[in-house]
Image (cartoon, rainbow, N blue to C red; front, side, top):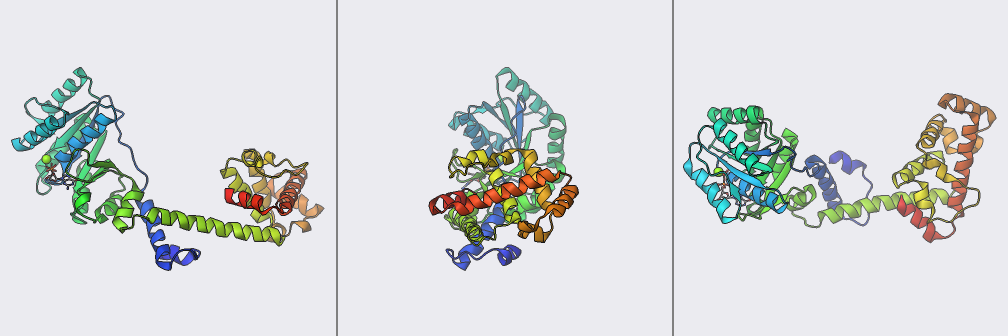
Length: 382
Ligand SMILES: Nc1nc2c(ncn2[C@@H]2O[C@H](COP(=O)(O)OP(=O)(O)O)[C@@H](O)[C@H]2O)c(=O)[nH]1
Ligand SMILES: [Mg+2]
C-alpha cells in the first residue's frame, strides 16, 4: 500500500483519506481474488465440510443443500458423526424443517456409511452429497484419520473448511492443521452477521491460497451468500460506498491521462511512444473497426489495417527498434535510419514507411478534430 500510495497520482476529487482507502480496497480485493464457483462436476459429486465443533458445519450443510436445491440440484445431506447421535439428529431435523433430503440409514463405519450413501444417491438421482463431518473442540488425530480415509477412498470434489469468522486469527492455525491432513479446496466463513471482523477471511486466503466460497450471514436456512470480494471488503472496511469510491478514483486517473494526451495532441508532441500506447488501447477496445464508426473520417485513411494482430506486432517491433530520439521526433527518420530500423526489427523498409505514414495520418486526424465533443469521445473510449 505504501508503495502504491507513493506512486499513485493525487486525485483532486478525493480527499487524501479517501484515496488511501481506495488503495486499501484494491489491495484487499486482489488478495481475496475472484469468486470461485463450487466444483460439482462429479456424477454424483461430494462436498465434505470440515472444521471444529461449533463453527457452523451442520447449519452450513443444510444451507448449502437449500442453496443447491434453488439452483435445481438434488442434494443429499449425509450425517457423518459416529460418536455424537445428537449431531446426526440436528442435521436430520434441519432437513425435515426445510424439506431437504437427508441420508437416514444408520451410521456404521465411515467407509461403509459412505458406500451406502453413494448407492442411495445413484438409485435416487442425486447430483450432490454433502458430508457433515464430526467436529471436536480441537484437532485430534482420530478425526484427521477419518477425514484422510474419506478423501483417499471417495475423493470429494470439494473439501471445505467451515470457520466461525468471529474467532479471528486463531482460525488460521486450525485451517493449516486441516489442510495438512486433507487438501482443502476452499473455505466457508460463518457468523458474518454477528461480527464486523473479517480479518480471518483475508488471512485464510493469504496464507492457504484457497478461495473462499461462501459466507454465512445468519441462522436461517437462506443466510448463505456466495462470496464476492468487493462486498465483503465493503463490510470489513465499514464503508458501503467503497466500491464506487474506487471506481471514481479509476475514472479520475483515466481522465487525467486523457487530458495529458489531449495536451500532447494540441502541442504537437504526440509521438510514436504515444502512438504505440494508443494502438494497444484501441486493440483492447475491440480494434479500429469497432470505433471508427463514431469518429470523423479522413479520406485515404485505412487504420483498420491495425486490427490485424500481425500488423500490430510488426508496428510494435518497428517502434521498439527506434531510438528514443526517433520515437520522440519521427521527422528525423530519413532513408538510412529507415534501413537501420527495418534491419533491426526484421521488417522491410516499406513496412517502416507504412508505419510512419499511418502515424502521421493518425496524428493529423487527432489534431484535425476541432470538435471537442468528438475528441472527448475518442479519449473516453480508451
Ligand atoms: N448468527 C449466525 N449463527 C450461525 C451461523 N452459522 C451457524 N450459526 C450458529 O452456530 C451454532 C453452531 O452451529 P453448528 O452448525 O451446530 O456447528 P457445528 O458444530 O460446526 O456443526 C448454531 O447455534 C448455529 O445456529 C451464521 O452464519 N450466523
Ligand atoms: Mg455439527
